[in-house]
Amino acid sequence: MDKIIVVKLGGATFGRHEPTVLDIGDVEDIVELQRRGKSLVIVHGGGKLATEWLTQRGISSRFVQGERVTDRATLEVAISVLAGLVNKEIVAAINSLGGQAVGISGVDGALIQSEVKNIELGYVGRVVKVNLAPLEALLQSGYIPVVAPLGLHSRDKPDQAPQILNINADVVAGEIAAAIAAEKLIFLTDVAGIYDEQGNLIPHLSPGEAEALLASGVASGGMIPKLRACLRALSSTQTVSIIGGKTPHALLKEIEEGDVGTTIKGS
Image (cartoon, rainbow, N blue to C red; front, side, top):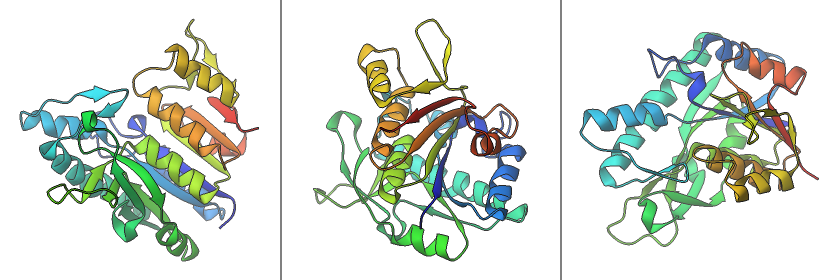
């Protein structure tokens, strides 16, 4: 269980016209890395597709510091889109190219155990425990776990509350990387990396510099949970990278050469 790479697939990995279809280059990279003997854990988002489904149902979307406010109706859509359509499309894409992947959510095997994070956010979870047993079983059997970002409502659950909580995918990736002491955590996203106030790409950051970006407000919107997840992962993970999924074979290049986007290294 050493030298595991956690990869978070973000919006840029899905096609514009087919939002559940992974970019073929990203799938090829995942399959090639597995062929080379790399142990991978994939965590995926799917927020854009969830927003489309919600809009079709006349349900508005609201975000607080990059996290979706989740009522019961929104939660039902999130579960359907994340654990259903998106997860299975990713697994199918990997398996169809000769890889070996199994799709699960944080609910399966009580992988991600959680509690309500903030009343203002509704049914959004804070991770209280990561149960590594399901990941270990899949990895040791030669499979790539593909994880949908949902959590089991396992702590302080009122009687009428749902048993499943929606959790930001960046948060789940950071928590899994920290719990498994990953060799590397890579965020494959829709931007090339982290930018400074002048709009210049920052190739390297220390944890302190990342915290300063959060405190100053330079990091905003969806970058807030991403940077917080980076800092969480660095408690036991050596290196975290945020790279642009629009670059062909960015994942393979990052693992082979590094310095594709923004890299944050622990002390």
